[in-house]
Image (cartoon, helix red, strand yellow):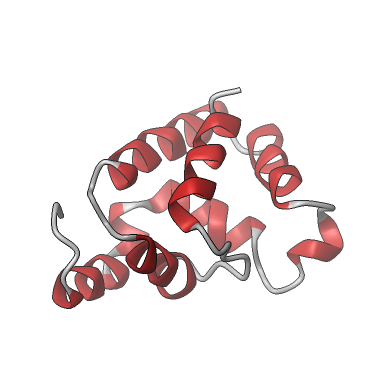
Length: 108
């Protein structure tokens, strides 16, 4: 997973629910199409996940996010993964930078 070729990204997207189940739940479950009606900000949605999910799920999401951020995927690849792999309806312009912030919120 250290390169970000199209095939690698497509494979990661196809396996996102299996390889990153906690992130799949966080991004797909808390950033669904109506997420902004439930949460004032993206940070509030992540904080809701931390508050509502079992402690183990938040820890797993942190661990999966560490692995994802260390993978070397480009910002464009991370954007595709958020949209197509995790089915997130919130995709920031700078995905990698935002994911670092999500990691910090998960660790709070």
